[in-house]
Image (cartoon, rainbow, N blue to C red):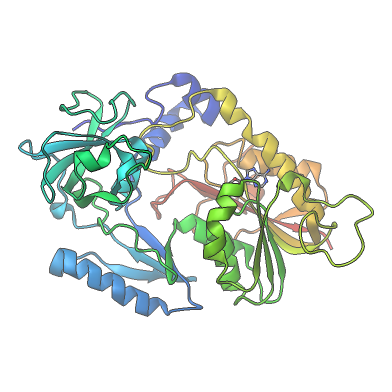
Length: 438
Ligand SMILES: C[S@@+](CC[C@H](N)C(=O)[O-])C[C@H]1O[C@@H](n2cnc3c(N)ncnc32)[C@H](O)[C@@H]1O
């Protein structure tokens, strides 16, 4: 069965030029990007519920679905809020389609979510064969080329569609492709099995727990927020790390969440409103430092005077190439990738000024390019002698890549979640921790 070996569909310019890794490392990296991380992780809000209580609910669902062969659910050392769900046993995974079933085609981002255990939501469906009835089982494929016509009625014939799994129809063609002003929403196909073996439970996130990649959880643990502190989350939407910060503060202290996207801030507000410690603002974080002299009186929102924060999280906008599985990358031009270091550096410069002496700054990205990760660190150490690199613990990722001006002692302080990591199969991610001199 065909499975992609690169998210760039063989665009060598993007592969070599942009990832900037040597050619022998490139092939395994690209293949790794296309594969699905097998372990599902939830972060439990321990201010509301114990991890054990949430674990019981997850186990109940798994047993109802898979019976005595349901996968293992377990915690991790040093990360007491994390719950992991293993993949299904190899022999229970259906890897090839049943040719008697009708076909459903989905886009690649829906396909990627499906491989990580999601059901199929209506907007992700590109085509469904005619006469598929409610509750009927269908074979689900992803269209890698983007050439499948939306609403197509006939079987989509392509050598680069990939089989993803089998699901049960919950919405029919007339509901999916109704051409009305109200696009269809809700679950269109409930997955029964997928080729990755990640249990198809859908997203169990609620106020008690959040489906979140392990490196994102580690990132906030590296920031290490302490009750009573004043913390800035510079690029906060959709607020997943912001809520984790508030939980580690015991909701005691202040978390300022900024994002320049009004719609993204609007949609995270209800979720963050349950925490007393969080205030969110639509704001361009490249302008967060107040002009000198700072305005007198109480500062209730951005911009802020220099030295206002004990800790800052800069979870920077980035190329997002670490998101796995990546069945096809939507960045098609090198120019797009080359734009990120510029904004990352501008945001970093603001963060250094806003940090109090002795304060902590964590820089993170969900990508794998050298320039947005180790390259940024190397630039920052040259540009800002007042910050030094400190050990990004607790450690779950590997060391950073060595660079000519980032020696092995320094790159060992970084955390890179990449394809050469043997112990942990998760998304690509990068974490660096800095301290400002007192
Ligand atoms: C990687 S996402 C942040 C994810 C978030 N920290 C979380 O864990 O839920 C990057 C965010 O940066 C925001 N962003 C991009 N440029 C920005 C700027 N100049 N100022 C503030 N936010 C910005 C984007 O809107 C996006 O929401």
